[in-house]
Image 1 (cartoon, rainbow, N blue to C red):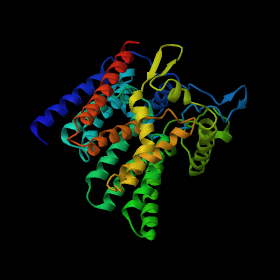
Image 2 (spheres, rainbow, N blue to C red):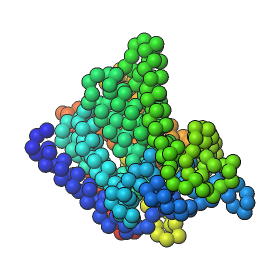
Image 3 (cartoon, rainbow, N blue to C red):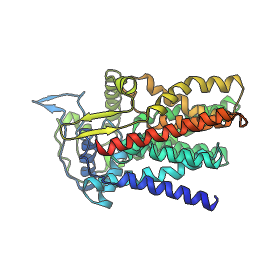
Length: 402
């Protein structure tokens, strides 16, 4: 990289880091999500048992209730919060600090991903937009699991784009997809992306099937290994649930418990995500996920220009590539289309963080299709990018001063 590019990218990273750590404790943990992640992290870091929930109420077990150890989500994200507590201290800032660091490290990764497809100056501008993108910023300032999963996904994507050997790039991408899914199950569409990448990269069906299966095994092994603390917790095995529900309780567990837990997770998420409707956040009020949790207003915010542009591009981009037989962007399509599936599941429609990144990537790609001799088109494109930055700044101001 040129010296000027390094200086500008470093400045963007410094700005991003400042925005992610500034007054990091000015809101309490988001109740219930951050709060239950924090209490679970206390259990893994210090064996402290302060349950926020109980599925056992008035001597009746409610299997549809949230679990006191947040077992409805995989372990890895809470283990990272526990690591943050051990390194940075048992405070609100200590719990959130690792997330802020990883959120900052995403900036140079995103720059390199964009640089793969667009010129250097546009890659820098896109990195700035990403650094200021309010959903990514607000998630990075919290211990929401999406932020950790986002970091793993971007790192895997970077390795896929910059490793030359096809088998190695698919392996490392799958490895980090496994880490993403081991953090938050809502990143499962990346498994479909792996299937599509195998279809695009291999000509023989036998090779497509064999490589896909091998990559699935890699993802499952990563997922399974992330549950080691579930099997070998060295604290007390005393729980708060009836013995028959031990797989959802404190203490160490066996493989049968693991299988029972996965079955419960599946039934829990099918119930939750197909019966609860989050479309209000996408359609009625798409740029604010604003909740008063009894103590403070909590806000996880998306830029509406990026959200709606992504939805429009979801239709236009594949058609354009097909009509003009442009194959070099099929790999991006392999990521974009599967991750858009969550928009059509009403209980998942607000999980936009990775979808927004892919939308921003395609917005940057639009520059490659513009006639560089058409001043009007170039001017409109620049105005569009500037409008995204302005809206980012307005929402960030709102975020800090609500």
